[in-house]
Amino acid sequence: MVDHPRARKVAERIQVIVAQMIDTRIKDPRLGFVTITDVRVTGDLQNASVFYTVLGDEEARTGSAAALESAKGLIRSEVGKQTGIRLTPTLEFFLDSIPENAATFDAALHEAHRRDQELDALRKTASYAGDEDPYKKPAAPEQAAADDDA
Image (cartoon, rainbow, N blue to C red):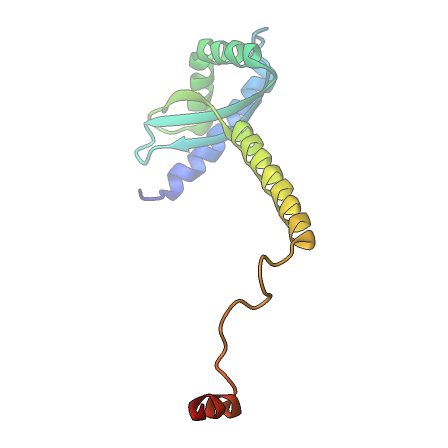
């Protein structure tokens, strides 16, 4: 996929516009504490995917998704006015899964650290099952000569 500098600039501008709209102009009571995390615009500037997170439980997420869906037209018209591009991109809102993924990674790292500590404790109290060095060593030259004479 080719990275288009103009699409990147438009995406950054759309992110600011949408965040300002959510903060100041959208007064839907279903809208929770929404943060716009990323915007991706196609190379032809026709479609924009807006990624957001919501602070709260599942009910806050579904309410915020419904509020954003109902305000999509108002947000899109404001994006068209403020960007000044010929064709205003269509907006699609996607719930960003970054916080859930971060919590999963954090839990995995804590579990790995806990297991490392357990293993370190076992190593400190461990002893060899047999001799310390179980490998055969070549005999010393004098002993090899004495074994050959015998």
